[in-house]
Amino acid sequence: MRRVITAEKLLTPDKTFSRPVVVIEDGAISSITSRADGAVAAGEVRDYPGTTLVPAYLDVHFHGSGGADVMDGSRESLTTIGRFLARYGVGSYLATTISAPVDTTLRSLRGLAKLIGSEIEGARPLGIHIEGPFISHAKRGAHAERDLQLPTLSLFNRMWEAAEGHIRLMTIAPELPGADEVMARGKELGVRISLGHSNAGTEDTLRGIRAGATSATHTFNAMRRFDHREPGMLGVVLDRPELFAEIISDGLHVHPTVVRMFWKEKGSERAILVTDAMSATGMPDGNYRLGELEVRVKDGKCIIGEDTLAGSTLTMDRAVRNFAEFTGADIGTAATLATRNPARMIGLDSQVGALEVGRAADLIVLSPKGEVIETILRGQPVAAA
Image 1 (cartoon, rainbow, N blue to C red):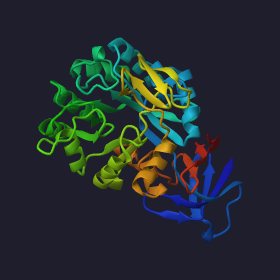
Image 2: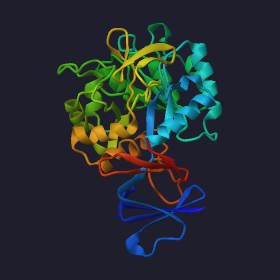
Image 3: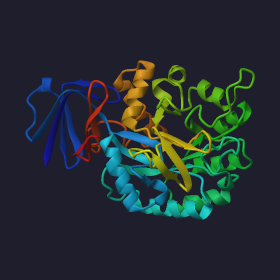
């Protein structure tokens, strides 16, 4: 079946189409033209006046939503997650684990590995993000202290085998003994290394970069505070132009003023929006799980203990709109932080993160304010939230 999508604008990595005409056949984009070029092709035409077409969002730091947790490693949970995410403009994500007993982690990785690449409704996992157990006790955040491990090749190799090679990203604290060796091994295997949940000083952070780190996990959160004499990880992340850097743009994890500072330093080529969303996302206030942890959610804020943030209930469409509001960036620019940039960081920019002929027809229709009017995944429309 041929489907034809028209709108006011369409954004590609190197061009903005005015009055675009997107032809979709067999779930893929077969042509992108402008109505100025001639008549609209025959087919089922869906016109979206005054809107902008952008690639479906990619969330590289995501734990769960709709009451489901990726650590379940089940088709049922990923289907619930996929349906939920699609309504908010997300077409793909990295299933992000949290520190847990080793056997639990390996069981989750095995379950996820069997599902990656299979037919799942809605948004699909492109791989796995290992967040923990190789993180700092001092900056563990919501991770259970009993489940943290020193980095060893033995444990990393067990996780790699359980995941059947689907680990795309790993968060690690570079100051830990054994971290250099594990980072180097991960880089060998094509795993992107992200520095985070770390109390690292400047020299440890720079050593992590030399060992292969290319990104930073939820910048500002679970990092040593900046000091003008010892800038530490935060100072290095903001200073080094080659490093990608995640940020949670919900107004809770990072103040809008600091989001603006981050934007000035990292810019449109290296900034990445993530949600760090957990199973409570889209659900009423109450008690939920993050891996094996009990998290209480009140007014959308996820807390363990007295006041430790434990993930978020942020959706990516809201993250994009917040970022545009906080920084003054236009919606199209903000959207690249949830499309092109994360795809480049994890090395999958030839598959996702851009609208191009021959690619899967995964796109979203945005209002001028950035609201998701419709999500189209593999050529099929999905009702927005």
